[in-house]
Length: 584
Image 1 (cartoon, rainbow, N blue to C red):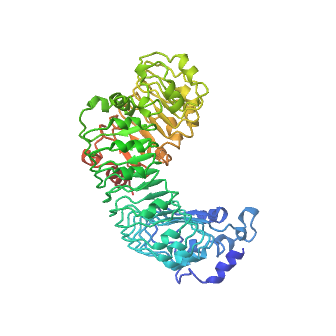
Image 2: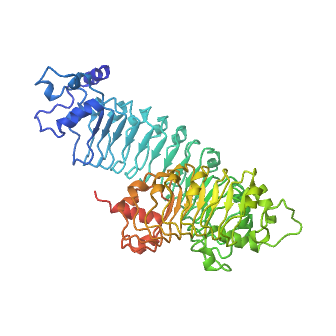
Image 3: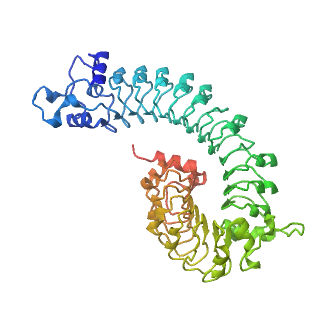
């Protein structure tokens, strides 16, 4: 009760009107809020916050005047402080200073309103942890807001912000800051003082320079005016994902995951590649790259390389020597010397072909990567098993895998299995250490045995006869990517909605007729989704809310909207269009 008394003493008459207006919030809702500490007034057409909301914890309820013999469940003086107030999707044009009468608020949601300013009294909500202000008309923030010591999440996307107060650096507990889709040209230098900040979204602004805390893990600077990336970026040791699409970059920064699509990059220099020796994902789509250098082999940890829509005419055979490369995307390049049908067969097939083009060097010993024995040259490739931890038995058109392969792999902690291009109808693998399995181009109609490999990160099941996936696949909590192209799926596999670790799902060339965007949104790491060449008659606008998606392929489906011209413009255009179609 001390906090309530304090709120009453601050302004005992605040919120009273000369004329009594009809109550805008049902009394039952207010009564429930006093018990739960939560009040949801979203999407109620409110043009202002009713005074009874501000004074919820100050004034006794109306029925207290009528009945003084309350039961145990109706003792209003034992009420719970309001900690969560949701006011989103209304028509609010201002917020009263009376917001200070709710000092216990932890979450305040004001997104999707018409607010053009905020009261300085927000600075008195010292318990506030989440403040949602997106989709308003805010041009600036009150300096007092920067005194909220417990604030951990601040979302300001889709506003009219042109500048930010230097005091922003005082929000020492801020872990998530979304400033996307504003008019920012410069950032306050104090942004580097936010030592707890992990996710920073600056996309769709007018920034020409960067500054951020060294502890940021995800930094999205897409669609700005960046021409280079500061050297200080290399000091951001925690940085894992950097999105720099649609800028004016000509050089590459150093990162674990690097998204630099839609820039002006023309070449990859050896010294640049030398700075990327720990990278796992490199997206270079929609640039002007003409050559992939032989030094691409420096990227030994690379698992995914996307050079879609560049000017590459030849592909160096050395690409096939990247030991961890699982996905190589080359669409939209004027490649010569590689058959079109080979490009459609997938990464593994292409890499096998490129290995075959490497001329043997008599000076090399078995220690070199080019000494790898191709599947056609030996029944059991002991070198691959011991050195690369790879068990390979592909292109044999075999109905089963010989036991002698598993005998040779015993005790070797094999992490990768490639049994593609056979006639397998079941998966007879007996290796518990697997993280990557390739069973593409077989005759599988069931893959339940895969579910026992709990360390799996990548699965390739393209070109089989699958129409469903086993429910036990939800136990694969480390699964990052799954390739299911050219199978018989008629809908998005049910179990995949439960595999929250997924980052890549390739379902192209199936018969998929429906996808549930509401459930898809729960896959918060999903960045690549291929639904091309399926039977989707319509695309739900809510799919545009899957904001984690960085690559969405929908071409080759019979839907009418979005139009082919929008689809051709790429993922961002499609998602923007879908969001614009969501009923308000």
